[in-house]
Image 1: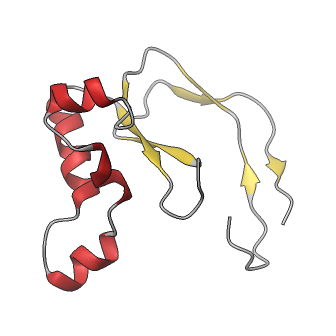
Image 2: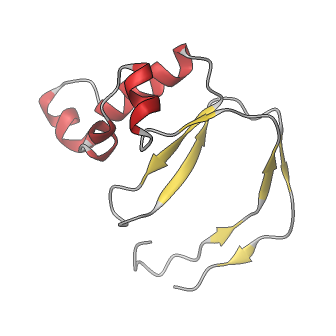
Length: 102
């Protein structure tokens, strides 16, 4: 999290019957033809170069394989990750939001 003074809330969600592709799983990445290192590549650098963002290649491969989303490793927080959903019709709020410490 950035130390920018902006309050953030974490909302617990329940997602049933979803397949999330995890590019950190080297076997799964190989099955989809992606390099796990792409998830750590700078999208800003690709933007400046005018090339396709490596993380988009991961998302595109996951969509083609039928995934509902991906587990996306953080580029700024070591060990951090978040979920990116392509479809969210099986997701519901599962509890109250919690204000995160700054």
